Length: 109
Length: 143
Image (cartoon, rainbow over all chains, first blue to last red; front, side, top):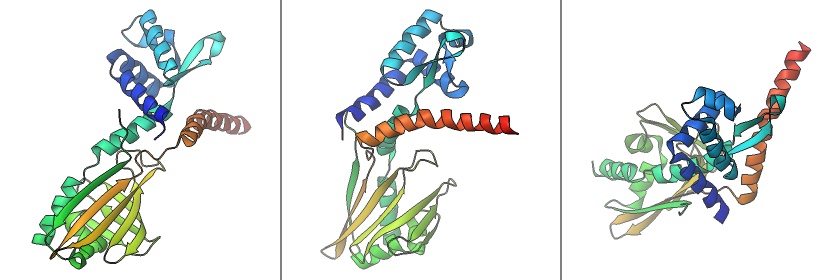
């Protein structure tokens, strides 16, 4: 398991642990790329607050900054880190106890 | 944080391997304990399918058939989107243990993405959408 894949998954969970960052990521996931000003218009968070969180998310690779219209920076959600985190959750959510108990019950019937 | 790639469980079952094998590798057997309905083409490369009570369907590809000792298949990782190509490998190993069977199930591949393919997925995703939307714009411009 390469070390930095773990680091990527960890950054996803750190990002998702904060309600403001969850809100920002959810807005980018549902509405597509947006500028800090767009997000400040949609969400009950100050533009400075949004800019601070976007910088952290960009450092973590969860959003990328790109040139939007009129030279304004737009932020785009990066889905690859989320997919890694999903894989981690899938391993934790895998339930073999239930089916194996059912197998034993079936054979004992 | 540890990223588990492999999940392993061992159970002792008070029935001989032949009987456990039937429960694992036949449509009637699988439908009786695992899914609600099942189909299986028991040969390497064969398809199998199980439908669960919630309506979820698991499609499997049979990989190893060594009666009555090893049965392996791959399937889609539960919890990931339907169109996600990643799959885990599930292998059941049956060993005679007294009058019964020691059954081991190993599911592996949860952490299958290597660093390189992660980079590919990462870049591919970003460019994928940009180019698909570009193609849509081209198509709309041309019609």
